[in-house]
Structure formats: C-alpha cells, structure tokens
Length: 572
Image (cartoon, rainbow, N blue to C red):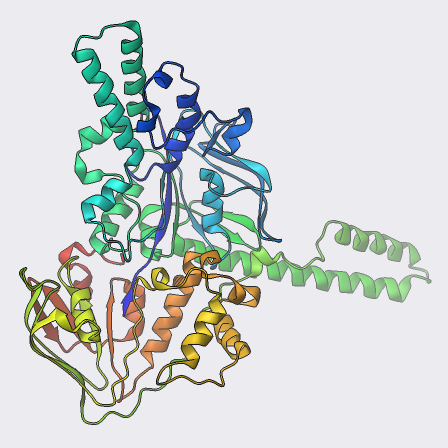
C-alpha cells in the first residue's frame, strides 16, 4: 500500500518577476492572440508553433486561456462566477480576489469544485456566467494535477513534454537567428528576429536558460517525494508573486499558504491570515458562533411572541404592537433563518470497514529470503540480499529517500511480477490473501466505466466474489466513503481526483480502519510520508530502504524519523 497526495497550483507574477518555472499552460494561451495578430511573425513558418492557432474571433479572449481585464488592482479577480456540472449547479455567485503576493489554499470536500474553479481561471472550464480576470501585468503559471502511470516515456521525455511551447519558440528563434547570422539584414528578417525574441521572452525562455534544467517546467507528479514537497512548500512560501494552491496535503498547505478559501455548498468562504490548521479552528468557531446566535435569536423571538399572545388585547396592547414590529424586523433581517449550510457544514470522516483476515496456517504470512530485486537482469539490481519476514500482527512502514527502492520492494512482496526477484525466494502462506492500494490506482481505472459498475464487478467476481451483492449494497458503501447520491453513477472521468482515490478525509478514514485491523491474524505493509496518516496507524515495525539494503527495526515511529533523508517534519 502506498499513500500519497496530489496538488494543483496557480502562480501569478508580474512580468518583471522571476518565472515560476512550472507548466505555463495559461501563459501560452494568453499569448496566442498576441501571436496571431502580429503581422511580422506571421511570415515565419507557423507550422513550427504547436501553440499557434488560426486567428481567433474578437471574443476569443474568453476561449483562449486567461482573460486580462480590470481587476481593481488585484492579481486575480472573480466576479459573479457560476459553473454547472451537467444540469446541476456546482458553483454560484463566486466573488473573490487575490491580491499581489497573497498565497491562497483552496479547500473543500471531494467534488466541491476546487479543480473546476482553477479550470475557470485558466480557461479550461466554461463558465455559465461571470468573469475570471487577471491583471494586465500578470503572468500565469499552472501546475496541473497529473500523473504518469503507464507512461512509456523516459523521465527526460516526460519533462520535455511539458515544455512544448517553449521548445517551439526556441526552434523558431534559432531559425530566424541563423537567417540573420547568414547575412540577411533585411527589414523583414530583423522584424522576424525581434518578434521571435519577444515570444521566447514572454514564455520565460531567457529566465529558464539562466536557471538551468534544475527548475524545468514540470507538472505535479506522484513521484514527488517528501523532500521535493518540502522544497516546494518553502519555495511557494517565499515566492515573489501570488499563489493559489489546491492540495489534499495538509502539511504542504501549512508550509506554503497564509490564506484559506473553502468551497462549500456552492460558494466561497474566506479565512484570511490562516494556515490550514488555523482555518479548521476558525471554521469551528464560526460554526459554533453562528449556531449560538441563531438559537439566541429564536429564544428572543419566542419571548416576543409569548408577550404578544398574552397582551395583544389588554392594557398592554401598545407594548404588544411594538413587539410585533420587533419580531417582524427580526424576520426581515433574516435573524430567524438557520445559519447557511456553508457556515455550519462540517467535513465528515468516511467510515471504512475492512473484512477480517483469514486464519493463517503458521506464524508467517509472507517471506522474502536472500532476494535480489530489480526490473532488468542486464542491469544492476535495485535491492540485494533482502530477507524480510512478515508475521501475523505486523504493521510495517517502509521509508527512505526517493528512488531508494521502497516501491520496488513492495512490488516484490506483492508477487505479481515474478521476474523482479532475480535471486532468492518469495514464500507465501497457503491462506494468504493480498489486498493492494497503489498511488496510481486512479490512473488504472476504466475512465469510461461508471463508478458503481467498477465496484460491483470487482465485488462479484474472483475467488472472494459474492454474486448476491446488489447495486444498492455497493452504493451504500460508496456513500459511506463520500460518493453519495448520483456521484456513484458518474463515469470515472467525471469524478474529481479526490473522488477517484484520495482526499484528506478518505486518508484519515483509511488510517482509522487500518489502526484497528488485522489483530493477530493480518499484517500491513505501507509506504507513506504523510505524518498524520502514519501516526494514526500505530506501526509495530519500521523498515528503512537505503543503498540497496533494508534495515528492519521492531519499534514505533520516532520524532527523528521525520528529520532524516531531508524528509522534513509533517511534509508528505
């Protein structure tokens, strides 16, 4: 089992500021209109531009990426934004501004509309009404929530794929530069060179060259380990510009942003000058205060009504009439209306009940003996001389620096690729039943299938399948995990990233389930850098994978475990 988190990030910086050096999808789109209207650059072979399109219509600013407009001095300005998902309204009357150098984290339950809101800002999601505007001197960088599960590309190819626009601009610049260097000093050639240089600069090309390949334009990847996330949190915290971050990684939020906006009940609630944990406290305080005020108003209204009923026809009728007016005023002011759901709604931790493990034969469930583990027999193995015994009752956390071989060891234990164990042996208990939850699970799902169909198909088939499980049974379990109502009937591709596999609540629910699971019969092996998750599981053993070896210790987690290998306390 490997537990991780994902993020989406929007960076807004003034043109003269340093580039954020991430996947600048929106910057490319914002510059398209500028390119297509530039007469000189149009004489260059535009087939070299993967980002150049035919000249858009006059209203194309609302189609082609971010929109520049009057933001009232803010870096980003949302005005009366409304977005629907199918026939259902998702967000309505959204009014929000991000001032220069503010860092905001967007939070909310699965499916609330966090990614959708960023999509509206970057132009990838159509709005029903309203506007999302950026300041005229602002560049927008967008780091997407994405993953590379199943990719056959090399790491370099994956990195380069995120830099298509910049690579194309560089190619054009090289062509026109050589043209001038070869002696063409015509006005046309010099204009083409100036325009190519301007485009390359607008895409951050010169800044990228100054910074080198260490900060190339990469989207968010699940391979980003705790050390990289620690670096990212510090980088965001010191970034010279505005940031909007969506992440289920609580520690990353705490390390990087200083304002929180919650999407709940279709609207936004701001929590300024709040870290994530401070936001939780403030949210609870606001909810309790709103409920207490509501109950106080009801009690006051009841007293007014009691007086009115008692004295409306007697000597105190004038006093009764004044109380009638006071009661009407309370109703008109909305003081007798229940607090808005957006204020008092609290996130529910999903409840997960895992089936009890079977009674094993003997003490050990799984054994690796003198194992040499790797992916290619012609290359040096990643792990050597690995001996690991998984007895009943063990809860093992595998940890270590990124690339040390933790996931490789877990795959070897899983046993679904026998060729990985090049030497040694893997021995499993006759009664062993393996359950696996991987960090790439969401990418392995059939995107066109309905969520409920995937669940029922899995539950009804296989050695442990039960053909009597109904759709209603499946939807009831899915509802307990947060996929309530019609969400379970959606196709996988229509679910948010958190709805597919993980969010803060689901991870907490999983940790709660694992902490009390197994007893003396089952065992758990986990890879995670999520400190809150690990603290809930109550591990019995710690395995450190480093330098191709495994060091196994029978103990619980220690404070020093979060300080080694540049993991960084509290950071995934």
